[in-house]
Length: 425
Image (cartoon, rainbow, N blue to C red; front, side, top):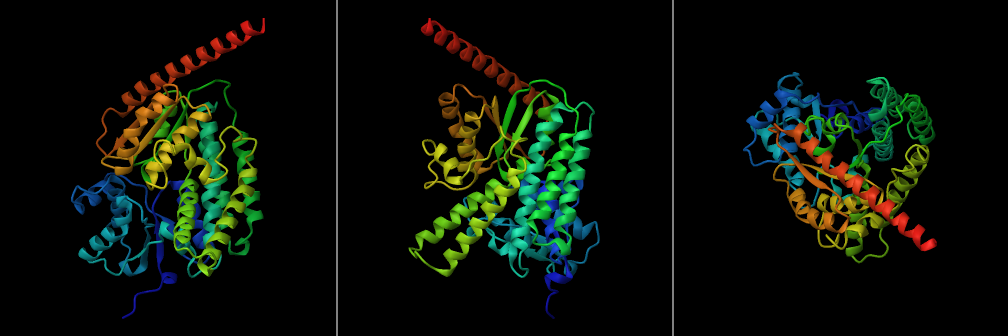
């Protein structure tokens, strides 16, 4: 008996974060693939994930596994009717083992007919588009759109006059983008996505805001943990509750990084001209061009939250601390992003990562040197494993450090201005 094809199954997509995953699911539906995001994680997620883990796995794997099992155990889906999207990586992270481990758990518990779809970073996730022309590109539009709307949400929500208004407008904006992505009649129309984004931008612009200044906190770290609200206990909302504004690293950074690693992989093959390298270069070029067109819509709103023009520009900032040709993955991105964020005026940086995460441990070992070299910029790693009991207090303590840094920076600026004035006289 042959397993059911993907066209006869529902594809479940992990929440990483919810907005981006919703957009990806919409893009799948626009190409004739039934897709939805996994149920919102809760205590049942932890119960199932921990029951089928040894305790050695990192927290995001437990959450992902628990949510997949909920679909089969609690929601009653037959294994032959589902597929789970579990991207993987070839880097130095346990993330590369998630799909294999989940496969073992499903087989062991009688769910062998469930499919696992595992596009990999080793080819810049080119497999996302297999079997449906244009899916890769539509998925990319969804990721970029969700990133941009999220960035504007985080610029707006801390200052809203009416509590909850920003989230309401964000939901309307995201829903409009998803409606375009999942409409087969509009599939392949970047202009339609752009129109929906403009509408969403204007919707968020309409939120009435207070005129006040808050410390700006950069957010880096492990990609799932920093983006999944359940996993990080709604960390960004807690930051906002303590009077800060967050600058969250978007999901598209990882795609740009994967593109660069794909290019380096093909270059190491020492083939100057090959169909594979040409296809890779064209795909990367198209992605960068599409992203630039969508980012232009927010050129005014996010002008002081710019993204690096090229991944090489970002990684160059981290070279003195963690050379990108000698290390891989999120440790390189986090270290480089801290320097980038400092150059753009943040008052502190938090690294949100799972407990025992190797990438986070390496980056954390470098952060004291960064603090020394970056004028005392406060940097703290927050580790998560579902047992945090003092998170609210710890965030409050960190923000006091950020405010002290702000005051010292302002004092240094005033002193420098006075010195210039004396020289002028």
